[in-house]
Image (cartoon, rainbow, N blue to C red; front, side):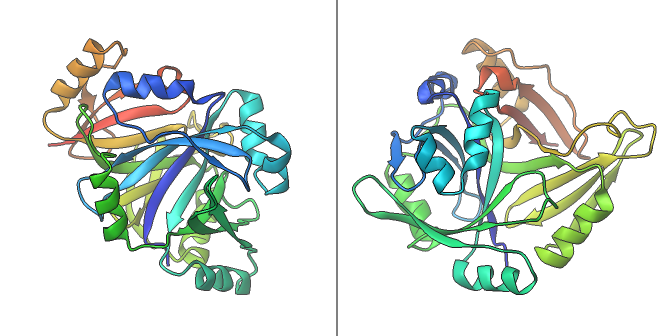
Length: 292
């Protein structure tokens, strides 16, 4: 049912933070205002193919009353906290059918449309009420065009014209203290099977593959794990596979003014990783991954 991770929504105090992404060497879309939601956004598209394309949405609230009225209370609350990752949109080919399926299972998924300021439609969406099973908002999204046509249009518009070597979205994650409940929601309600499991002395990671990317459910390995007391939350981090050597990407990030960590062995077997802190990118960290 879920075909892909379409985008991660990160609320920021204002869209001036986009300048930091441009400083890193990433191309962002111009500001777009959405009349129905009381929000404005800019987006960073990444992906070397239609199958791997996804984007990070930097969103700010410009009309609090409209945001609340349209069911975007979480955006208002996140803005009051100073921002951070709040929602994930999953791409589907038939949002109305998906909504009916979830509603038949007892999970409300009201439909609506999003328009640009000039009245043209951006997409149709359903806001899935997970009844608290996931610590973030879930949106189902369908665009008026195919994924291939959307990717080609975005490519022609220069949305993938980055000078920093991000290749594709690798994974997103959420802290889920009750892994059994999280597993049940993903496999029984979202109908996404467990793709892989990673175990360490500190944590257990359930990997849920959606399209070309992974969503990770992070839980404590046991009662003595440092994660055992952490509340459920969407991680304000996006992990991106880089094109070329990771060390080159780290050096470039530092050259452009970011305090990128040293490359080290990743938790995912066969990877190396480094990261740029969330504080330097408007509240969402950037993990850089290389498969070796």
